[in-house]
Structures are given as C-alpha cells and as structure tokens.
Image (cartoon, rainbow, N blue to C red; front, side, top):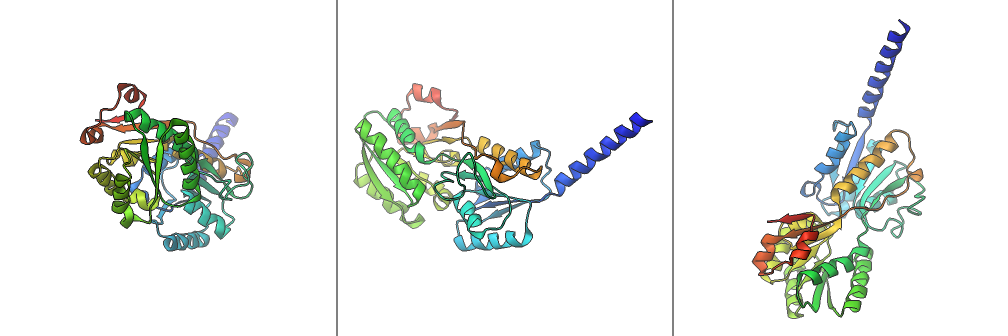
Amino acid sequence: MRRRDFLIGAAMAFALAAEAQQRKRISILHSGYPRLTPINLLFDAFSKLGYDGTGIDLLGGEGDPSRLKALVDQLALHKPDVIIAITSPAALALKDAKLKIPVVFAFVPDPVGLGIVESLARPGGDFTGVTYGEAGLGGKRLELLIDAIAGMTRTAVLWRPSRVNAAALENIRTSASARGIQIFSRELGGADDLATAFDDASRAKAQAAIFMTDNTMFAHRKEVAELALTHKLPTIHSFPQEAQDGGLMFYGPSNDEGYKRAAALTDRILKGARPSELPVEQPTRFELMINLKTAKALGLTVPPTLLARADNVIE
C-alpha cells in the first residue's frame, strides 16, 4: 500500500506541476511583423518543452514605435510571467519601461552596447537572451559576394541608420580595404526611398549589394528583391526569408537555433531561474542560403565550390 500511495502521490504531483506550468503566462513582443516571420519555430520549440500554446500571447508592433509603446503599456497591466522580446526595439522599449518582469530577448545584435544587459556573462537585472551577432557579419557577407561574382571590385551597402548597422558598415569597410573592394554606402530613408537607392547604386557602378535589414525593410523584402533584379544587382541579406523571397543569398545565425534557445531560457526562468544569473547566449550555428532561381534571372553562374558550402539551395 505504501508503494502504491507513493506512486499515486508522485503522479498527482507531476500532474499538478504540469498544470502549473501551463498556467504560466508568456507574452511574445515583436517590434515588427511576426506573421511575416518564422515565429512558428518559437511555438514549435515551446511545444517540444511541453507547452501546448495555452497562455502564450503574440503581440506585434508592426514597425510602429507608438504601437510598440502601447503594447508595452498593455504588458505592464497584464503582468505575464515572462516576456520574450524579439528584436532590439522591443527589448529597448521594455528596458525603458522598467516593468520588473523577466525578459528573454532574441535577435538583438549588441545587448551590452545598447545598455540592455551589463555584460554577456552577467546580465544583471531582469534581462537575458540570445544575441544575433549582426555587426561582425558584414565582412563575411562581402566575402561571399566576392566568391559568387567573378572580378567584383565595387559593391553597394544599403542600410538604415542605427548603431548596429553603423558597426556592420565599418566591418564591411575593413574587409573591403583588405581585399581591394570599393564600397558605395547609401543610407535608406524608408520604404519610399528604395527605388531611388537602387538607382543610385547602379549609377555608382556597384556590381552587387549588401542589404541591411530592419523591420520596415523586412516587410518590403519582396520589393527589394524585385528592384535588385530590375537593376541586375546580386544581393546578400540578414534573414533567410529575404533569400526565399527573391534575394540572391542569406548568411547569418540560424533562426531555428535562436528560437530554440530563447524558449529554453524562458523555460528555465519559469522553473525558478533568475535572468540575472543566466548568461546571454551567442549564436553557434551560421547558415548560408543561395537562391539559384534568382541567380539564373540575373544571368549569374554560382561557382560549385560556393554551392557546396550552402546549407540550403533554392532551385
């Protein structure tokens, strides 16, 4: 009887723990357009950790700072157990609000430089998460364009002003100087400036373009791809969806890994860990995607050696 009572008690305790876990409330705050992103990967990651989706809210700022602030005010009232902040603007808006709610961020390139955490090893406060490592990838993206385009001597960099993008531009300039590549840098004013920016890149005799993405540009990625094709400019991008929707290449941290690690950190916090004690994690998996349909439309033959390095090739 004692053994049976013990087993029954253990089963009841397990069931209660599982029920309590499901009662926890998680809010996902995306500063951009979550439905245009592979946010399902985050829900899949939670599912594998035993969460059925109950109690998980998804909020999108749609690239509008005033809407983002309103959503942060809403979170202050509802007080979820953990907030997942997707992208830097979401994390910064939560930092400014000082909600005293644990926050796990993802796709944030420089959380220390942005003042979100004290250090990667010891975040301090209510924030931890997964970095995106964007600033140091500019040089690598330039190298991939050089490998793809024989005899390339000049490339455009199209970017929206931000601290992270400025750092990435410097990384590109350093790499370009070492390889004898000229850089045409063009700041973007917004979506209505895209066509003019591509015209300027063509007039500057750029042979390719490194395109730096923010929420607005991500939402207009199909227009970017069409303009690049019209101007015969091979492009490399920050997110895989941009190559899937017509850009030539993507190179960057694995989205799947970023979402899985954000979900795992959230799970640890819900089980009692403090964000201040959980080191910020950095990407370990980087992926290369090549769109051969776009290459063909551009009249570009991608070298077999480069194709062999790709993690994903769109035929």
